[in-house]
Picture 1 (cartoon, rainbow, N blue to C red):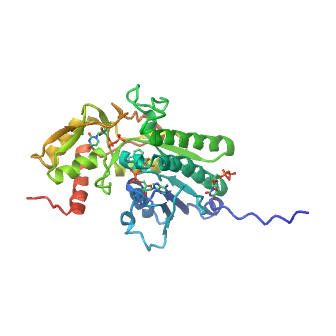
Picture 2 (tube, protein in one colour; picture 1 turned 135 degrees about the vertical axis):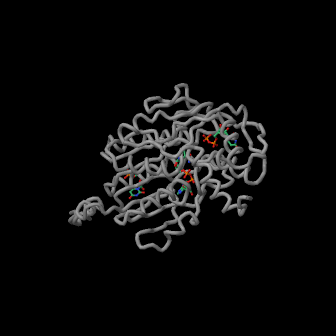
Length: 336
Ligand code: NAD
Ligand code: UDP
Ligand code: UDP
């Protein structure tokens, strides 16, 4: 004897279609740097309801303070390594520490966040029929032997190094995304994010742009890690958010590189910060960390062609915007 099945609960996806474009959106890691800017953009649309799930490891409620109490906004203290039951149409899955200092602090937790966290969000996507976007990373290319990096490059990653919890973690997360897509028909999107900077970055999080700007403001030497000829390509956060939303709402699973192809050596970056923020500051060469990729620059042909996206903000325009935010938070106004 089996008891009769209850009638199916209408999925939020069907609900949304019925009411046209009303959208309930989950942003994991929404209290962080990129996540909070994404939330700002999503909240601009009055048809969106936004739920943030974050454990505040590297993020903060302060980043979301203007939305707390808003009727279309909800904030949940939640660790994505635990199951989450909510009803949503879209999942932007960002939860994961992004700065090497933080992801190396507890590498086992970083792996759990990438693997169990992504598995849980995929289980959620499967249950409610939501579309899910993973913020993967240019680190999946490791120390790349192809330059610039395009999406078909499989990468050169050390599986047992100190960065592996992050880069191999994201590679497994990408695999999980594709397996859920192939096996369960989940709608997926994968963004491979290249170095992103802007207001609200943690001031002492150890990433190069935040370090240099904070150091320039505090009159401390800019710490260029040897040899200083290694390159990165820096994308301003508003461009990044625009790219992520286009990817989510477009028709392509990805992976798609989202980043700014303007490539700089770390010495050039230091020179730019010095010139724009504090011409008197010194530049000091310091020791590097293991497995530091020597070069990195996105090939963004796919983003241009498939999403009609390319970054608008040049490094020299973005750095002063970040300086303003850092000066406010450090209480060090510009001297006239
Ligand atoms: P961030 O550290 O500012 O934000 C990450 C957020 O995730 C934080 O609010 C943190 O508290 C939260 N979080 C971490 N572990 C969690 C867990 N287990 N459960 C719930 N919440 C958790 O970093 P960001 O720069 O905003 O990066 C966001 C995403 O973009 C990350 O997935 C990162 O890997 C990816 N990404 C960022 C960059 C970059 O340059 N900023 C580059 C490549 C990829
Ligand atoms: N999950 C979740 N929220 C949901 C549905 C599932 O967090 O709304 C988690 C669930 O706890 C499981 C994971 O997602 O650990 C994968 O779920 P799935 O249904 O794919 O696999 P199964 O539960 O069969 O292992
Ligand atoms: N770096 C630096 N000085 C710093 C911090 C970082 O020269 O104070 C260098 C680092 O060696 C790397 C690059 O800047 O080559 C980018 O490092 P970051 O941690 O910002 O990001 P990654 O791309 O390595 O994840």
